Image 1 (tube, rainbow, N blue to C red):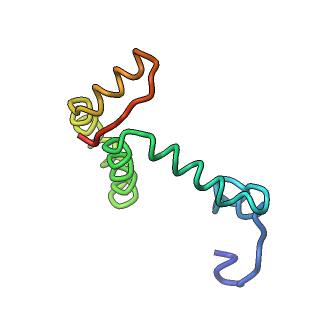
Image 2: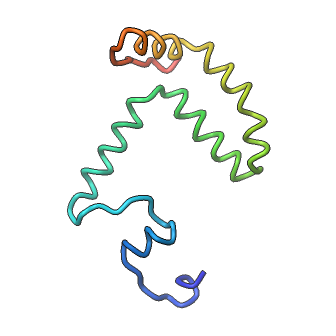
Length: 102
């Protein structure tokens, strides 16, 4: 609230300290780091990423208890998907998964 009410400026280190940003990178490395993170997320099972985002939004909207209550049914749904089988096979064979979103 302090910065919203006063309009005071702050640097990246302060933004990190107060939790407005999760990570500070050297000047000029922002895009490379953002792409690196995006690629890591894109490599994950798309249904799991979507479910994670939905559950996080549910927690914000309705509280942690609602999100926790929804987890077992979501995990069961995800476990029954083709992507789950692909992920397990990739893990067991130590190969990269090629998720299909089903």
